[in-house]
Image 1: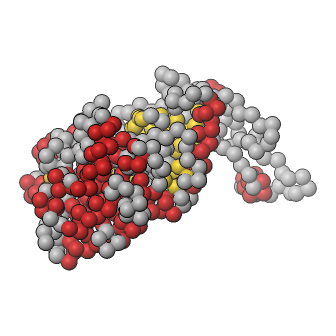
Image 2: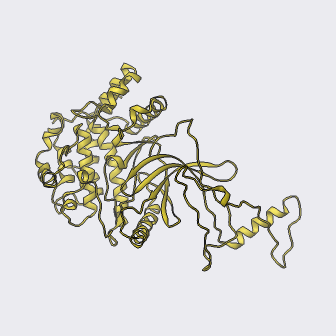
Image 3: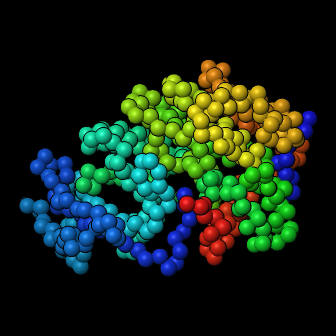
Length: 435
């Protein structure tokens, strides 16, 4: 049996230093309580030119703390601070808004725009985050927008509590002048869509030594027919971590519903992460208006059927096949019927897309066929099964290890992403997708 070409030799990026920052600015603490029924926040508008909140609307005044009636004020050099400290602990509830600076746009789609954003705290604390601003443009009325945002907010809260290392961390869901925004962790690294850029490898080659370039081609990624082709062990390592993230979501009865290369990040730490949960939904609370990326959507989604966790599995299977093939699987298919037919017959045509050495690997072909099966009832049952079943992703890696064809993929990925980030500093055009 041929074991494939896995090799055996061994966000969203930082803003340019010259970037001019703009700012979201607001009080650190507020004496008004948003839990009070009569609380009403003064309207704050986004300025279209510079995308920052007018700081003239913000009053940053020192808080004068009064002693609690009947209690003595602590004496000593920190007496007033101790009173404030005690007051914070006693009141139990506090409200504040964040200082957010929108630095640069890092993504845009049907739902809105995502910005790399700097969140500022006290004493020089800063933290990069991703801020997704949801556009109301595709909604018929403000009521429809509010209703869908309420649903997305509930999903965001559920995802935030999953706390899985391969799943995007959601930090907050905000309302500014009725426009909703989701605050998420900023992932330093590259999404798969950028790493599948057709001319990427030819542009990168001059920046590596011959020895290092040979290793990258043997173990990680090499030229494909149309775009870079990931080595099988590396591709399966990425997908295994995505399967773990999906399994965590599915255990909470949440479907991602938009798995595609642009929503899978390779982090600087050497791990993969599923991002952008804007299309995710609870199985018990599906959206009234469904959206998808047709090229990566499961067949039942295109045909108007029920979207389930198995639909996510098919989408990830299409991604895995594209990584192994070095070419888009459904290229130049703008006709709906043609796309549906291609997905219906793909299971029997896998050998047309991958190199012979992979097509001859029964274990890998069984995994792919089980993930992209056009019938959701005969598709692999769930993400955990796809990883751990007898012919699953973990078994393929064990096969590589047994035959001494495996490498330390996490470490290899960490080093490679570091190299790409360093190259991007001086040559951002190499890893930038055409508009």
